[in-house]
Image 1 (cartoon, rainbow, N blue to C red):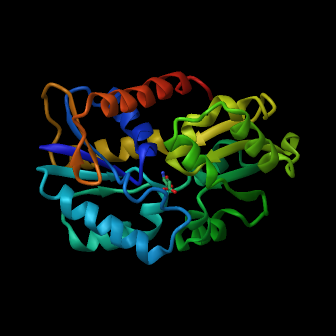
Image 2: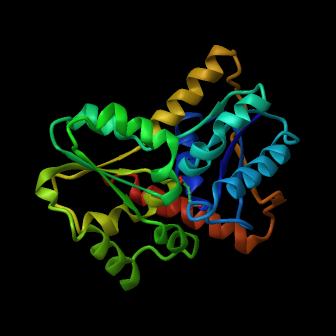
Amino acid sequence: MKIAFFDSGVGGLSVLHHAMKALPEEQFVFFADEDHVPYGVKEKEQVLQYVDEAFRFLMTQDVKAIVVACNTATSVAAAEMRRKYEIPIIGMEPAVKQAMDLYGNRRVLVTATPITLRGEKMRMLMEQLNRERLIDRLPLPRLVDFAEHQEFRSPEVKSYLEQAFSPYDFSQFSSVVLGCTHFNYFKDSMRELLPEHVRFVDGNAGTVHELIRRLKERDALEHLPQTVTCFYSGREVRDAAELSRLQAYMGRLEEMYTIG
Ligand code: DGL
């Protein structure tokens, strides 16, 4: 059986990229809801409906677990999907706790989509972790569109980030949390704007770790030749140009992998 990775778009590839290294003998399904991306600026009810449709489709694909490789979809719909389905559903949330555990006494900037930052999960995280008021929240919704258009290094990207980061005195910060899977593509562009001591923290390793734990628990790990089947909103991607588009994202992620 296969492991599904679901996202509104190409952000989920950053989690899949990680999983492919950690699980070289598993078969993957990658579902990008390209018909409906972006999620992060839409109404919650609308996103819930998109996730519901995607899950119904994924359940026909012989999957043994679904990774919601999207902080926004997790915040809106993971609990509901867990009520509906019995297979392991692994969600993502901005890795604020990880950042605080690593560098607790300095400020942390949490970047994510507007939905994620407004959501109940985030409210709970803030309640638990922000007693000393060291956490700032910054929505960066345009990065999702830039990523979908493979625009990572343009002057527009740079000036968007420059402006977004300008209110912060980064000498006070230990880290920037990448709380949206689309943001992993911009580590080099961000790096140029941040002092060297500021680290990136994302939830990719933790999510894959949890996936492996859940599969082991069910004795569901396999030894198969690794494959990845990709879908855009339920349509299998077979077109050579689209397959090479996805390949280019994986290449970009490999480049970003070493930027900490
Ligand atoms: N990649 C998604 C996340 O992790 C959301 C992007 C979107 O706005 O669709 O939050």
